[in-house]
Amino acid sequence: MDGGVSQVDSFDPKPRLAKENGQNPYDKFKVDATQFGNVGKILKSPWDFKQYGESGIWMSDLFPNIATCVDDIAVIRSMVSNFPEHTNANYFLHTGSGIQGRPSMGAWVNYGLGSMNDNLPGYVVLDGGLTPPGGLDNFKNGFLPATYQASVLKPRRIPVSNIVALEESSQLQIDKLKHIEKMDQALLGKVIQSDQISSTIDNYELAFNMQSSLPELTDLAGESEVTKELYGLNSDDKHTKIYGTQCILARRLVERGVRFIELTCPNVGFDRWDQHSRLKKGHEANAHAVDQPIAGLLKDLKSRGLLEETLVVFAGEFGRTPFAQGKDGRDHNPSAFSIWLAGAGIKGGTTYGTTDEYGYRVVDKPTTIHDLHATMLHLLGVDHVQQTYRFGGRDIRLTDVHGHIIKGILA
Image (tube, rainbow, N blue to C red; front, top):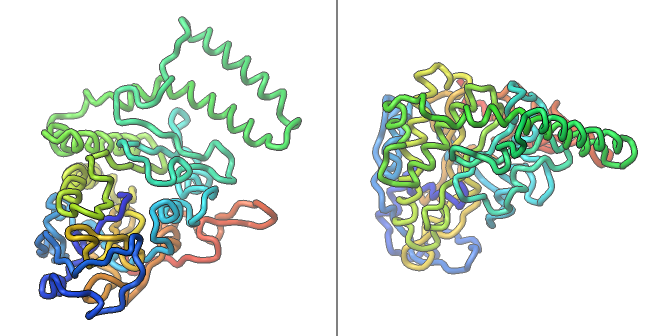
């Protein structure tokens, strides 16, 4: 959910914003420097909040479908980031570092757990149309062997380019690949970065296997009309259809043993969740694209008995200010934002952490990206302290020297 979902318009209700709507924020609290230096008046949420589920968690009507799943999710309202700018904040969210070049979390999981399916990648990004700022480096292997980086698939019948064989016979293709492998093997031990050559050989083999596995994966003919309706594949909104296809493919990848899957957002025409203006139109367009498919995914996983062994994370790189940018937008806010998790040992119907009366700063249980990574690895069965890789003369880990498991959201 890159761009900066507004916490005070989604998962963190702040009635005081309505009471003080239009007032000067400088008269109410200390205002930090913003991305564009355009500080407007306090801005109430355009959406109504109410309690949902047996747990009674407050959520806005921006996400009416996700709200029906509230008893299965844990909302963290006290997330903080080190970076107020999209590229660095996305690197931080994905790799635990604000600078380019570190392995993504998906690569760490792929490295630590390996693949459960020889015919599919262990780490897949389902690209809905918008790659996060920072580009593909958000999904790369960094200093880990290249075989652990993400494979990017499109939510379409042929999800990756050049996967259909051009050769007239499979034997001809096999002969060509064996010849390429023979040349690559000849270079092993003769160049400094032999691990990259080994990874290239592995990737050729995987690509060959994917020629049969990907068409089967993306063939949704066997999915019932009820299931397609659940995910929004019959929606009049083409962006809901795109994201619904991503979500149903994500479930199918889970069923086939793919370890780590990330979904990027479709391009709804409002610059991701980054509404520096037209907050209501932009957030509504983005939410409409993802709300039904995400709820459908949670319900489908649960009905199939897969939710208890699958971790679902809804997260962006930072939040937004409780005051306006201009008249009807919100600027970046790394000092407080909300995310949620479900499944795989998460205590559903839970909220964790607190922000101030304006949703501007965290006042209780500040939670870092390193804490999130440590918790996700823990739920996947990996010790974030023990999982390391030797590089540059030291043992490096995803969480560096930081990170604590967020025990308050664990079942």
